[in-house]
Image 1 (cartoon, rainbow, N blue to C red):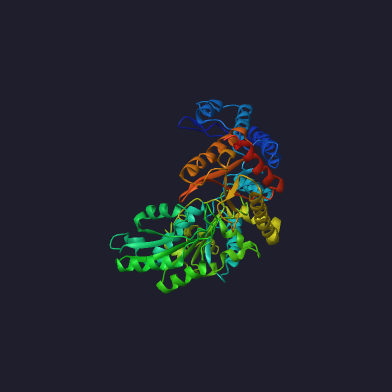
Image 2 (image 1 turned 90 degrees about the vertical axis):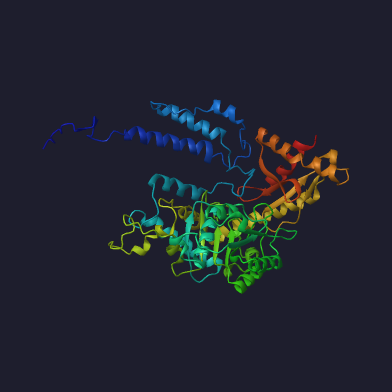
Length: 502
């Protein structure tokens, strides 16, 4: 039978017959764009002869990029040209000589997982729309909980360690005062939390966002290595109580952002138990050391925490972003704190086990399947492969430290215990000068100039900062398994080349 031709249906001036998207053209564009990504990004990711970045100042870059969005769409060939421009002028964070942040390198398995999730476009809130990814998240969380040392627990993946820290802060407050969820802040006593003076800035942001107030964040002094001093913590807890405030939370850090310091968790946990305080550990950076039998001792006592933030997108290279909040409680505290029971999503009379509809534990509605990236990498490498990744990064860090000690003009701030190598480069003109105010004032100018030169040359990217009375210094972080000993040597050679005339 010959199908009859249907008459056009017109509604509000719009013809509704058939799809309007040109699927063939779209498929061809995707195919060509993927080929471009492979050629310009993936295949060049480990090529040290490529530039890390092609620096352009903002106003100049605006002129080089066609940023205008027009009334009429542009043809595929023009879109591919735009894609090439985006790749050309973007920083190559996959490059072996990108050391600028606490993430780097290219994990091929995680990349494929990201391609898949972008193509499938899931939202992880209910089992009916995201069955595979919810089960993956459950499996990954369970395994991460085991590495912390808990027999059971709960958790959820979040868009960033900052959000995980905020979740934990709110969860600790809810545990102390469940009525706050419905009645709000009115009538609450003055709540106080304690964290390291070296903590991540997200602690202040979370306190501000949650209405706790930044003045109610007590920053506990650290020792010379950047670790929280337990005696100072307990002293501040007692002082807060004497003032009539109510301590409810201690946030310890395992792997501080700048120095890579690990707070003494066992001693801090003892204080939390004595004062009935929730202990949260921000292990966003240092949590991955748990994968290494050699280095997991850095987090000794983490099993005593009530909650942990851990970012696999950092040392384990799961791809930004991949961040978990893990909670020891298994009574449904996370669900009780955050659930809103939206009836159009979380119906209780569904035909399957609705305990798998975990989205109500999140402050988000739409949520990306970030656990899948880590799961794919873990499946590919195995636990031993992830352990080797951590061990190799820390071994390379040790090599760099030894080289810094040998070389004239380089000076360590301190012996590192993790992958954060903090050092000064002292140019020849300052090497004979006494280390007084003039010396430090001049040395403070060195790192910013070298950073500018390396970026304009495109040879490498390395972070610098002043920190707690110390003038500007470089912070080198080793993560990527694509990084070699030769890259460590190049780093020091290049800094000396770029700064020897200063």
